Figure 1 (cartoon, rainbow, N blue to C red):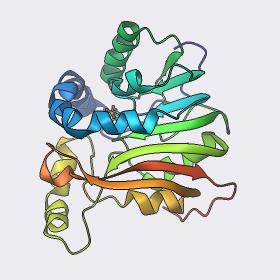
Figure 2: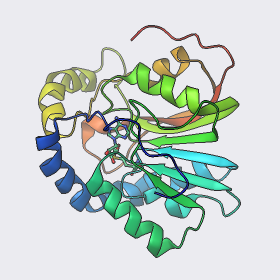
Figure 3: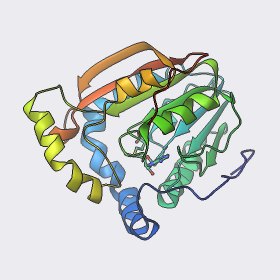
Figure 4: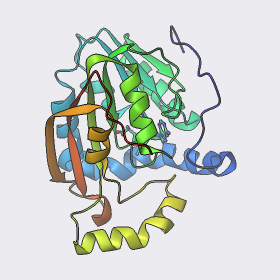
Length: 236
Ligand SMILES: C[S@@+](CC[C@H](N)C(=O)[O-])C[C@H]1O[C@@H](n2cnc3c(N)ncnc32)[C@H](O)[C@@H]1O
């Protein structure tokens, strides 16, 4: 990691360390292949559109294998790619080299405790991460803390299906099993409300089905939320 303070404490994993070793290695190895169809069908286009106006100092949380790297505008001053999983981080490092993104730095920071001072970034980008953090409200408070007042959270997440829908029933039924094999990924998170409850104002939001993905992760939200100067956070 260059020019970025080391993580203060070991990343509090979403899954126990021993399991995370094997699962993390598998996820890192197969992630891009598993996501390929959805990337082609919609995700890449969404990423491009979401990231085209990002500028200044940018933090990407849960950066994974670095799929977003090619979508950041050349004008961005600095991109810190934070990724707590070492196997994902190795892929990310390779991608930074192969893409030759000089402004990109790597951090092992996790959303439990981001190793950055308050107000360090103009933008935080977060895609397909909030489904698996241990504490959604805490993670959003950390994101808010590292943003400058008026800074923006750019998000893309799969979320709970509509109330009373069959899909939601199945999401609820299968979530406990899914969480245990997928690194704590939740189907039923109400991420839009959590963003609003954590001191952000919604500037832009779109709800759309993630094509070519498994049915229970299809409902998604994506957009931009602006950090308000006063937090209206509810307790988590
Ligand atoms: C589904 S992948 C998404 C990767 C990437 N953001 C993308 O859009 O392709 C989720 C990523 O979030 C990371 N992650 C999980 N829990 C996290 C946490 N508590 N803090 C930060 N990142 C986390 C995982 O290690 C993984 O790389």
